[in-house]
Amino acid sequence: MQNKLCTMVVIATLAVFFTAFLVVSRATGDLKLNEIQNAIDAKSANWIAGGTSVSGLSEEEKRQLCGLIYHPVGAPRAEEKGETVIFGQPTSFDWRSHGGDWTTSIKNQENCGSCWAFGSLAALETQINIEGSDPTIDINLAEQYMLSCSAGDCGGHTLPGTMNFLRDPGTTDEFCFSYQADDGVPCSDACTYCEGRMWKITSWDYITPDFAAVKEKIQEAPVVAGMAVYRDFYSYTEGVYEHAWGELRGHHLIAIVGWDDANNCWICKNSWGTGWGEDGWFRIKYGECELATTYSDFQAYSIFELPKKVISCDSGGTDKDIFIAGDSVYIEALGLSQSTEYKVWIQPNPVTEGDSLVSGKDPSSSQESVTTNANGNIFSLLIWSIPSEASATNSEYDIVLDNQDAGTVGTYNAADDAIDSSAVTGILAPVAELSTLILFSAGLLVLAGYVVLKRKLFV
Image 1 (tube, rainbow, N blue to C red):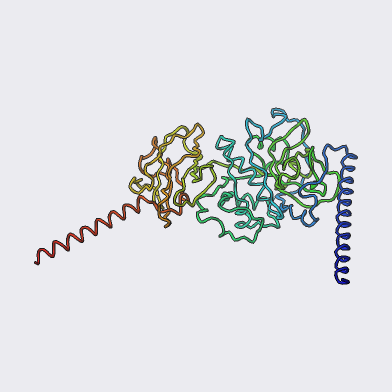
Image 2 (cartoon, rainbow, N blue to C red):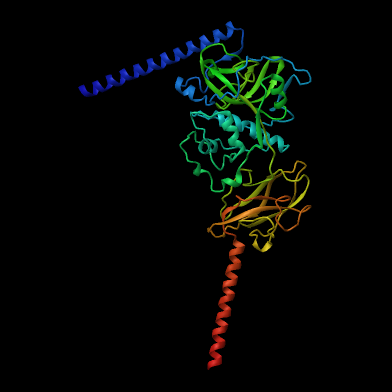
């Protein structure tokens, strides 16, 4: 009885301490938010502080989110505030509402200083939509590939190091290497046919640190940009941010997708999830936090040319390169000749320049013909319904799109045709297997006939 009473007392005491801890923590958090909001009001700033998905993190965890390593490229200059309105440029611009939403969804870097990967790929994903003339392409690129395969890690990376890696070798898609917020994951964990799924920029360069130059580049595509992060930024919920409270915590890479002169601000995409800021986005006052104002490697633009790309996928458009019996193989294609007829072939891997495309080697029942849209794209085209009785043995295939209006029809020509060397792997063509069985059976019949004939000759 006495032991039971002692246990109850211990439990009750722990409960009291835990409750007190929660009360003190909440009170401390509320006091800090009040202090931040008071500083905002005292500065007559136009934003609101509140609880966010990152405001409750420890100070060390907050620092971890800032993974841009400062790397100056020349002698420092004084900040150049620029003019609010630049002659000849629109007073506002936003890739989220420029005849459609050309941006992709907000992501979350989690407890890893991989903002350098997220900020750069935020810009590249939108560039793919822009170059493809279709805001719905929305390729989801793999930050984990950059984290596992480049010199960067959860401790951060420089902007030139990031952009050079995106130029060569580039990155793959999220389906091929899903994000794990862990720089210890080996590069070899990427999907087997990763090399054929790479996306890369053509080149990149720094932007002169003045508003006119940055705005000019934003109208072509989002700009990759670095900024200083102060303690109050973690508690940003809405409005036009400007630093009002707390010391510097680090530097952070984001993408600038637009501006609004009426509110004197840049419009930016962050990588702290939708529970922070304006559903993951933020607006920041011109001239704040070293954004687009200092002579450094803090802002860069990239040039991206949409390659001819064939992507195997399921019926919903999700990338897929391993198919089994009973599956349906679909493709999407980007960057092809506009309004042009192509014939789709499935051929044994590898297909090389000058190879003839042979119907007898195609495991599907027929070759689909399709005409690209006005932007040179193809979406959700069914090319093969694999029989449910197909063998589970793996064979590798290439999907080739043969341009019917250029080059040598029926032959793979890299200049005119398109190929996905990673697609449709992990299946054995049932047609090919049936042919093998027929030939084997025919061989047995010939052998049996020979034996019978031989017996008759020697009887």
